[in-house]
Length: 229
Image (tube, rainbow, N blue to C red; front, side, top):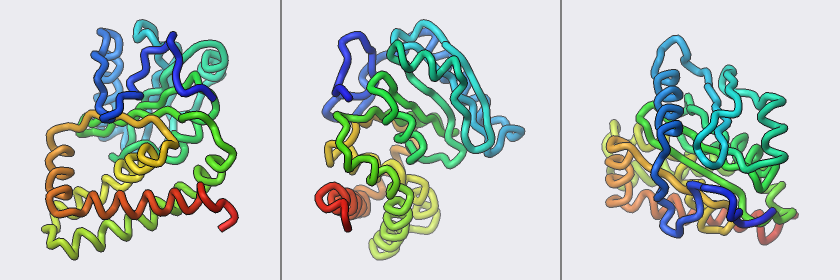
């Protein structure tokens, strides 16, 4: 799997992790459509996915599904022949999941974007493939569960108030994906809404993010360095 493609307008790849590419008119409309879908109570627990070309000028196909939007044959076919982006909402309100990374791992022509109801954007793409990544992706949900418990403990120990602790509990995936990037497994970028940025700042000031990140990096390296464990 290649690290990059000169023919692709990826949102991932910047060293600081921020999304530095301006959205096209079609991309803005696509994000607005997905956000409106996510915020409609009728669609609770449902996902809407748009497959967008790398130029941001064409929606290749769309799909919906309960908790997970499915890839259509048209989407799969496009991903084999051209750079594409799979954009969807996340009912969990968190960042990219192990299912998203598994989808991204199928091709170096794929970038995945998740949007939550707060309008935060999380984007990912796999780096050069290594065999041990397969085990890491399988263990991703387990690591996320351990990290969630640890960060809750860190937040309580730091004296974070309950409202912020509950809000921060939905950032497990974001912290884990930051760790995945730090361990050179993925390209990861994001653009946090004001509300999500505020809770991250609270957690950072209390040292909770740093402790969570250190824990996640350790768990990831445990798999990468010694896959037999």
